[in-house]
Length: 630
Figure 1 (cartoon, helix red, strand yellow):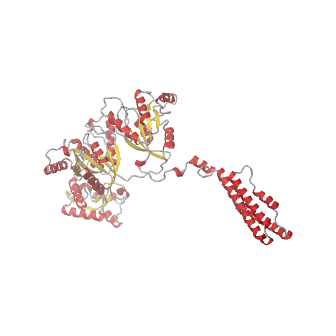
Figure 2 (cartoon, one colour; figure 1 turned 60 degrees about the vertical axis):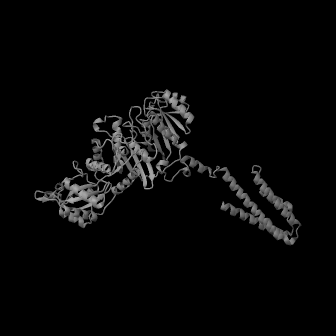
Figure 3 (cartoon, helix red, strand yellow; figure 1 turned 90 degrees about the horizontal axis):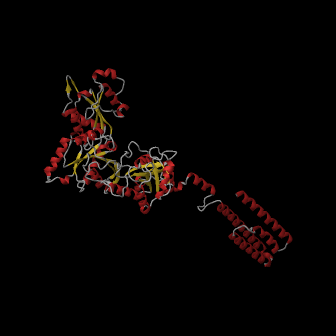
């Protein structure tokens, strides 16, 4: 374009110079007929736009009028008139070039002003301007609600959509397994979303006491969802309950709904099974298989591209994980609803109401907390293989994922054997713990002595959790629930605390001065030095001459001294005992207390001891272990 402009400009100036020479030679005026011939260069063709024609016609009239004035003017103003005409000619040429460029852009662009080739690329690869590239919190993601009548395979489809099998929704061939609504994260082709699993919807009368509450939970999930997946059973066919649910959706639902006909994995009759569900009046039925995943990819393509904004970056949650653990019917779901501030979980007097784990994130001034409600854990001998077996497994997995455990006890029934077993489980998993004695409002004739007796009773019956804080609460009235969060914050802080090596050795040396390590025969225990090698929980390794010389009684004494000196309340302390020669200890100390990888990675304590007494090599095996490290 620049080259063309330069060439045209040169031609114009050459023509003007030639014309100026002819004027000087002929000593005559410019005739209107000559100017009329030159103005024909800017005449617009018949297929040009109307606005372009008007502009050029106006410019041509302006030139003619100026030339007529020039013919009637005296000779001494000839040069000025010629320069004015020359300026007008250049302006017309620039206007014409600008209009041509505008016409080219208009012919090759859309309403956004982008060229056609760019629009084709955006339609093929996606428009990055339409994507949400900012990190999005999990609770702000689009929600897909999976609804339907009982026992149609909704939980199986949820596990398939979210790729969660080991810790996914409980699946069992029994109606009514899912009761509360549970949320799980999923993704498809860079689209991130949440999938909510619901219980079976039942509108007619039934003998199930939970039917009304399960339906209420499903309708709440539908009210906050972006898209609904109505799951039907292709093997059983269209039922009257399917028609009732579909009729309610047509009248009350305001979000896009897709009919998924489950159990249609057959390549020959799968499509045929889905055809009768056109009768529901909710659009095209999609034949799918929750077990094999057949047809779910096509459904996700349709749902994500039409009804969701692409969210590629999900904000990583930094919340304290809290698990509510206890035997059945001690008030876990009631406390969960009270902490959350809503009726998030179904609550009843029937033991075993909660089946799957339910988690929610709440935000307070002190931070964010993810609270997990679990099913009640009964004794192993009373649990048969089936739905309850998977419920207990989910509860044990919640203990492993949690930072702080709230162990709920019943103030009316007191502490039973199952409470002791759960306390042992929490201590063996090495999790911070807060003991909550629930139903304190139901205890009659309370006074200060009653409170002290209750705390003393818990300490004596649960010795493995003697370091845990105790809070006497009422989930029904909300008594001391705020104090419960204060205890959680303190326990979590101590759970992830780190202490320098110098302070630990100072505390250990003072403890050994008050009580020397035990002596077995002619040998006495010696602690060379100690250091913390990990947190969550705080893990301390002791380098001694022979771990077998340190009995459980002395280990508990040393743990109590460390806990009192460092104020490590609310968290367990993991103690590892390692046999080491004095010569190797001095060599390691001169290197700056460097810890080999086999110790830094964590040594698994031996079973049979509460604090993990680890067998090491004593003085007699120093020659064999020399040169092999710790």
